[in-house]
Image (cartoon, rainbow, N blue to C red; front, side, top):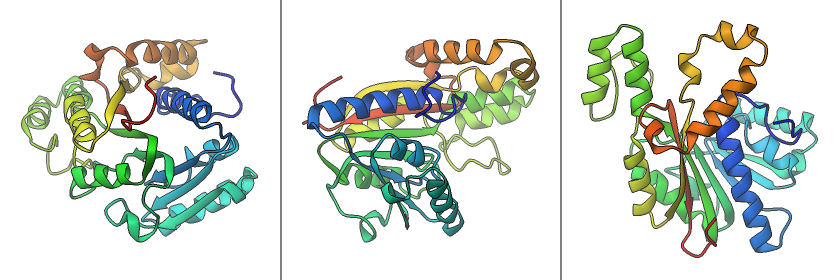
Length: 256
């Protein structure tokens, strides 16, 4: 948890970062190269890209927002990794208008599938950007977490609506266009030709715990982080996680 080269150990990134860093470490060992080529689709201002560059990897961020890419450039410069981070404007559907096929050891697809018109096409494009041996890090909104959150807030009709809606939305005011179950995400990954290396639930408890408790109770944040890490791999908790993380691996990559 004290590794200065990782993103701040937050409830939103800790589990994903641990899985991703382990996967990249395995790719470094398998390739014999200290620096990998990483593509971050929808990477925004560099929450993952900049820390990955600090680890020595070369990261290309594709994002549709000019403002996010400007923030990425500034953030990379402040971190001293501007030479290892490149931002290009685009999206996962038009991915190969801005980057090449088959050139990356790892592709991040975090918070993207919820917003694209065709999630299956988005995943296929992400996979097509991988080298013959590579890994895909997929993070998307979980259906069960939203249902549970609406129910615990007393919005029972909205909870039922989200449960029954094909896109997992609780109503017209729902800011999230689409949510997924773990089965849906793993099917997308497998249909794109990858094997599923791991599935983790993200923010299983974090969004249900009062923030004041975490902020004021000594040791509460670290204890909650440990609890999240312990529950993340257990399939029983995937159905209530706010987000779901799937690690996909090409058939040619060594298994974990």
